[in-house]
Image (cartoon, rainbow, N blue to C red; front, side, top):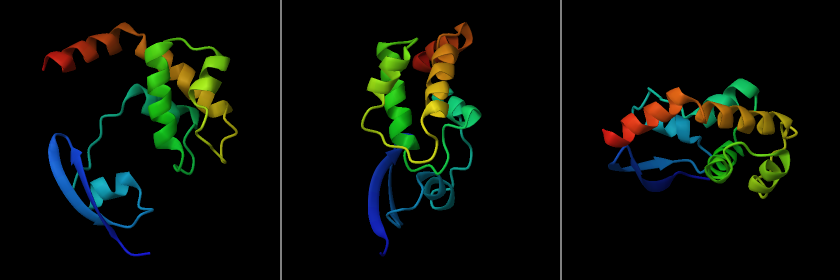
Length: 124
């Protein structure tokens, strides 16, 4: 399959790229737009640290669903995590590492340093 044109907004700027449909977003951002620095969200850090991201296919959906889950339940139970991530299928990890990552991120996001950084960013 050939490349497709994709229009999107990154860091407040409208961008257009031609990319293969299965190209990883990370590669497109780095190679076509030149964004090489990252500032990871605690959920992304937890997924990386816990081994919750392996092949990367399900990771974006899992991370978005997990972030939304933690907005509703800052310290979720296993049943709440299971329900919050329902519909996101992973064929690599067996889900335990993903659950661990969600719990770790929840703890990190409840820390005083994360809350202070969030307040600073919203004021800037």
